[in-house]
Length: 150
Image (cartoon, rainbow, N blue to C red):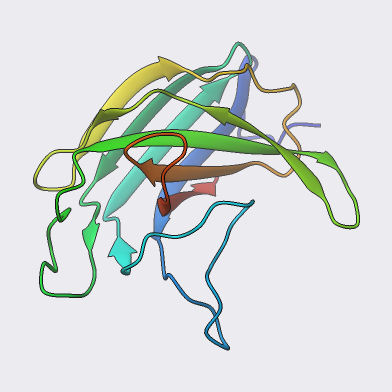
């Protein structure tokens, strides 16, 4: 069953974002759903995304910038971002997930981005245990931020 906040035709909705912290306690990489993190901490000021059952996605982010290093407060040369939605396909152990990605879209010098696209392949409906990652450059790049499910 879809959460009550998701309207008919909507598969998933995300309101708010979390910037990447590249390492976890003990010093290991903060890998999420098999995706490696960006090498430096990132923050995101504002994030919203809606995914429709047909795979259409609308994404808007503001202030996706480095939270550390010499280029703090900038996207440090990252000029393109993509969104990847992960849906759980089996509970495991370990659980498995399918990946559904947008194309690459422009990241402005202030860390803002906004795009409409269609995820490929189209995600299953329902999308169980959804996670949405914003990735550098393409669907194969490291993750920089994650959406907070609404």
